[in-house]
Image 1 (cartoon, rainbow, N blue to C red):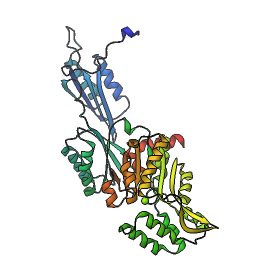
Image 2 (cartoon, rainbow, N blue to C red):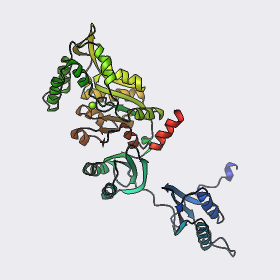
Image 3 (cartoon, rainbow, N blue to C red):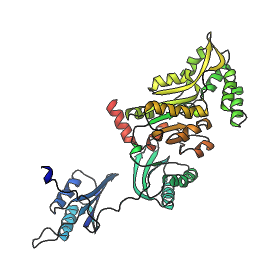
Image 4 (cartoon, protein in one colour):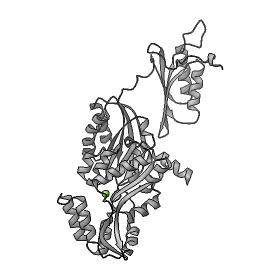
Length: 415
Ligand SMILES: [Mg+2]
């Protein structure tokens, strides 16, 4: 076909063009979709929209097509004939068919589009009702709903239009807390799929442990370290003071303890899956830690992380000196490092994700495009964009719209 023969673009029928919504429901088997369109093809109709899904072996197939032109002195081209043919085809396959006349295409989706991801463990009907009602209360319309995952939690995504992302967040956050589920609201758009950078806190986020406490156990000063931590939490010490006070208690420990502590570190469930999947998708992944490079360097190598930054325990003559060297990674430092990593990765801040659990992660969480409070203290949970309260780090993938199926398919392909 030469350029002059290409028909003008008239794919979308105007609001005055008669269209038919054909809905087929029943037991799924091969050939249903082909069969329906084969039946429709006899009437030379155009396809405006198709949606199909299969739930527990039952197919729901919706086709929006232009109505056939009126019969012009011949039989076999009228809407009535199309209806009769589709119904008899459906009956022959024991399917239910419904055909609704109307005009034009679907109504355009409202502006202000967001993805609302709900993580339930389990997801109750009460929760689904409350979330849907809260979305409606913001003026939002639920355009689509689909399941992202059934493992390790039930994750469902609502595609919502007509409401501002911030408005949805502020209405859904208290509902999520009341219902004991996690709800994340992320603005829709290409940005969600663009290459991103994910930066994680380490202690109680990427790993289950607090590394300083592992060291303290070797030094026999767990109680003292815990007391300093508690004082810091009460706001009597800032992070840097509390870090120095705790590290001082480790002075004199044999450097061989470093290796022992590395072996004691337990990754958070789902940590490997999260990092591996993100890397396969082309994300860059980093960690920032108020803990120690002696542990984060090993994690960086083990997991293939692109970036890692932490404090360094000073070791002289085979002993910990009780001091740290270099710049301290504290609350402000974590946010600064996120910016630096983003710059090095060539990723705009809006396309970064930060994950953390502590008050010293808050600046980083709020600097990132999406800040995820992971099993965090209430103060952190309330200030972050979104929260995950199930103990599986890979559930963060669902907040990014990545389905469990995609995670598992990638595992199968790469091995
Ligand atoms: Mg932490």
